[in-house]
Each structure stands twice: as C-alpha cells, then as structure tokens.
Image 1: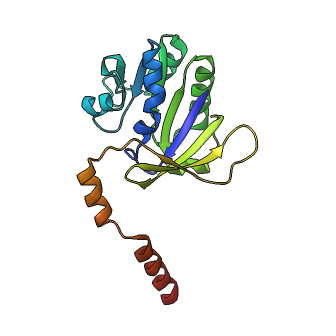
Image 2: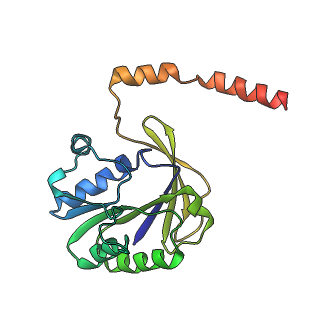
Image 3: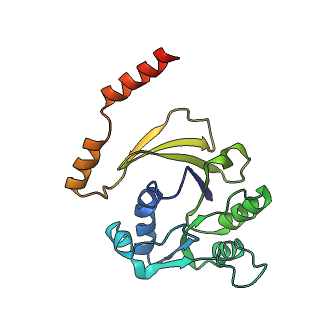
Length: 196
C-alpha cells in the first residue's frame, strides 16, 4: 500500500525514520529506489544508517530532459515492475488526486513498501493512500508523528519517535546549551499571554 508522509520541509529526519525498513529490504536482496530527493544525498550518511548505497537507485525526474515528460511515470512503472523492493518518492506540490490514486493502484500490486513524501498543506486535500502520517521535528533526534488517516478508528494522540542520533556528543551538547530551557519557554509563553 501507499504510505503518505506529510512534512513541513524535507530533512526533518524522514530518511532516518525509514532507514531500518529500507535496510531490511536490502538485506533481503531487493533494490530500493529514491525518486526526486529534494537535496543531494550523502552516501556516507546513508551508509551510517545501515543502507547499502550500492543497492540504492536514485532517480531524478525533475530535470526534464525530454519536454513534456511525466515526472510520475517512472515511479508508477517502478511500482508495477516487480523488480523493486521499496520506494521513497518526494512528490511535486499540489498533486492532483487522480494522480495519487494511480500511484495507490500501482502500490497495491507492489510487494514492498511505497512511501511518498508531500507538503503539509496536502493535509487539506483528500488522499487515496490508506495511511497518511503528519511529521514534524520534535528536537535534534526526535520526530513527532500524528496519524492523520488509517484503517480503523482514529488515533488522536501524537507519538514522539526517537531517531538514531546524527550529532556527535559534543555537537549535541552545544545544541542543547543553545536551545531554551523548558522553564524559559513556559515563562515566555506566560509573558505573551499576559501581554495579550
């Protein structure tokens, strides 16, 4: 099935969140494809997450070599091919519902996970994806996950997820020292409320 992840912006930890699943696919001898990552990827960082970079295929369809080419065609074909173990795709903004429906139908025939990453504003539009998750950063190594759509009853609570650390201990200490303490945030919020 298609899993839709809504992000405020790329790079909040979505690759770290999905890395264990992708590594398991690779360990089973299957190929993982990344479609249209918004930034250059670091092979070293991907390897640190347990991914075999030799078994990753990065496809950039946004550099329209052929005028009028369809950027979602390659993704749909990969899902239908039967040769790909897992897919992550950063979708273009304001994607039409019928295009997402086609991807969902292709993902149903696919025998592995298919993750599509979209802008947070897509939350206001309907989706064919059976699972839609909203993600936001909760700190240097934390994501806050909200289940926006799933099969079964709704889940109202948010889930904080600890990610594998990316900062060295020294850099993490500097980041924590620079961030406001919880009491400072509470005092600032109280001040704002009193001023209103």
